Amino acid sequence: MTIDETSGVTFQHSVDLMVKRAMDALDLDPGTARAIHGCGSVLKVQFPVKIRGTVEVITGWRAVHSTHRLPSKGGIRYTPHVNQSEVEALAALMTYKCALVDVPFGGSKGALLIDPSQYTRDEMQLITRRFTLELARKGFLNPATNVPAPDMGTGQREMAWMVDTYKHLHPEDINYLACVTGKPVHQGGIRGRTEATGRGVQFALQEFFRHADDVERAGLSGGLDGKRVAIQGLGNVGYHAAKFLSEEDRVKVIAIIERGGVLIDDNGLPVEEVYRHMVEHKSVAGFPGVKFDSNGAGALELDCDILIPAAMENQITSANAGRIKAKMVVEAANGPVTFEADEILRHRGVTILPDVFVNSGGVIVSYFEWIRNLSHIRFGRLQRRHDEVRNNQYTALLEQLTGEQIPAETKRWLNRGVDEIDLVRSGLDDTMRNAYQEMREILATNDKVIDLRTAAFTIAIRKISYNYLDVGVY
Ligand code: NAD
Picture 1: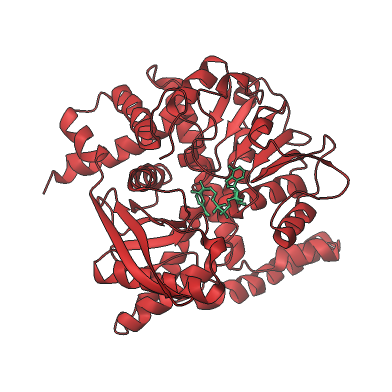
Picture 2: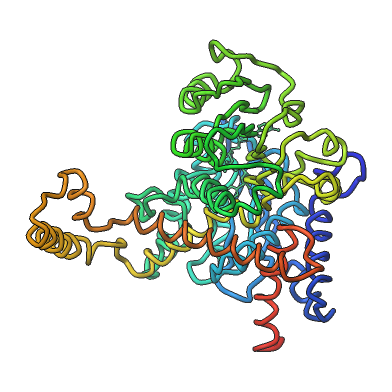
């Protein structure tokens, strides 16, 4: 069980304390608070699979924290370090995340207690299909009620197996593709989903840096350009966030912390090359030309502008929070900062962009994918060529009226009709910007809202509470 080493508070209790702080700020009536707070239901499964001639019994969970909106939504992780309490805490975070960013889903989360690196591809397929059967037969997998997505240790591949298993169980369900999100594009996925969470981290930071007051309050100045960033975890979320921020916003990724150690280069690490090295060697160790230190956790305390924990929960605890030197902590992972650490960092003036906001890109684009699956058509398919013809007419008219030639490259850009990836990015960017603006607004106007995390939870809880106030308890 992951706990804050010094205080002994578990991850779930840590989330509860953060939620309670927001409920207190809202003066929520205790009945509504209790209704929102508790985890609705949890399925625990134990199923046998035959691996290399031996029967193994595998344990898994799917927690449904809330059903005030349906389906309930949340990733499935495969890891040897997980328990029911953590799955419930992660499901709760999904509830607040969806409400914050106006994604009309309840919150859910699932996990299998396995180490994926110990199994072949075929074995992973067997395990995933067997888990899918358990979920579907027990009502925890369905396009209308419960829709998983990838998380730690899972990706497009697992989602493709899950959707295929569900399809064979329910061939009559015309919406079967919508039973999971994060699928490969050729299996009903949406362009931009794989990188969505990392892209969302980038959009969150871009929006933060549009507000000079907030930047100044964090003890920083200017824009993202040249900011010194340390990132923990070069998996799906961390890799994409580091790649986009370094390539498009010109931040300097001065440290990449992975299992087994950290790479450090004050001039900025080449993210793509480090990633390729890691995929090939299963480690960042041995990457040529830069410093490697086997004390990865210690590198969280490096002097930098922005620290992005993008690996797992409970990384900044009361044991190391006092030594964190970053001016900002951007929670790309779920729950990387414990409640006590959160308090310590706030008192030390460190700005935290909270997980329920920062890593919501995944569920936002999952929402787009789910809509795409239900509408059975790719976004942009109907209007793209129509827009192109229209834009051609406008630019031709502009040239005719001004007597000037628009440069060819600009004209190509102006004339093109939008396609799916443009719409996905635009919808994601818009959602992240709106959420941040709502958070800073409530922070500025409610004295009981002490930081951006409380702001995020307060907004989410207020939205969910309307549901109980409007329709009551059934
Ligand atoms: P992943 O499995 O693709 O990557 C995690 C990476 O972190 C791996 O490279 C792993 O080696 C590394 N890592 C694990 N423990 C570490 C440690 N102690 N120190 C350094 N590195 C460590 O997982 P992911 O999908 O990128 O998820 C990362 C985090 O983001 C999780 O908290 C997850 O819940 C959260 N998240 C993921 C998504 C998504 O769309 N994948 C969406 C929202 C939130």
